[in-house]
Length: 297
Image (cartoon, rainbow, N blue to C red; front, side):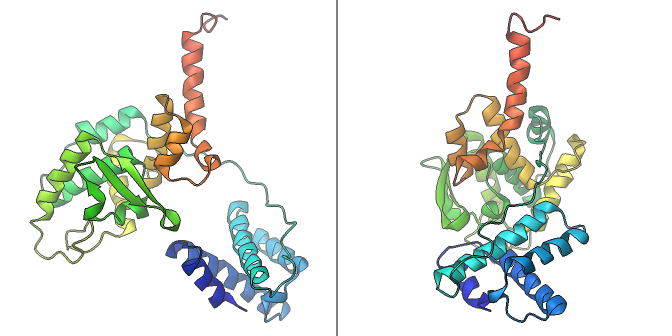
C-alpha cells in the first residue's frame, strides 16, 4: 500500500486540510482492514470492484447510511486515482461506480427574528468571554465563515482601514469579506478586553480562550448551542447553521447567487445552490401575497 505517499500528496500538492486528510486516511485504512480480515487480502492496491462491492454491502448491513458510504468510496476512488497518477494502476476499479442514492439534507436556518434576539436583545456579560462570544456569533452571521476559518483568523486579517476580513479557506484559498460598521465596533470592544488577558499564548490569533490559548472547535459549538437554545426551538443549532443562515438571508433579500458563492468561498456554484431552497420558499410567499391572482380560491 502507498497510503503514506497518498497522504503526503494530499497535504503538499492538493493542500487539503488536516481534517479532510485524516478522514481520507481513516476510510482507506478501514477498507484495508476489511480486506485483510474478511478475504486475507494484504494489499488493497490490487483490489477489484467486486471486493469493493463486498465492502459496500458490509457497510450497509452495519446500517451505515448511504451518505457516509459514499464518502468512504469517494476517499477510496481518490486513492486509486493517485495510484493511476504515479502509474501503479492502469485503470481505476471505481471508474464506473455510481454513488448510492441519498435523501436531500435540508438544514433550517435561523429566522431574522431569532438572529435579532441573539444579537440585539440578548445581554452578554461585560467581561472577556461575554464580549468575545457576542463578536463570535456576529462574525459567523455577518460573514458566513466556516468554524475552522473563524478560529484561524489572525489579528493581521482584520483590516479596519479597508473594512475587510481576510479569510483563509479550503485548499489555502484566500478571500476578502466586507466588514460592517457594527462588526468593527464589536472587534474594537473585544480587542480591548483581549489586551487584559494575563497570559496570551497565541498572540497572532483573534479568537482566544480565557486561558490565552487558541479556541477549540467544540467550544465554538457549545457556545452557539448555549445562546441559541434560549431563543430557538431548533434541534440543530450548530455554527454551520449560522453559515447557512447568512447565505439564506442574503438570497432572501435579493443577493446575486454568484456574489454569495464568492462570499462563502465555494469552488463551484453547485455548492451554493443548496442554500437556495429557503429563498425559493420565501419567493413563493411573496408571489402568493403580492400577485393579483394570488389570493383567489
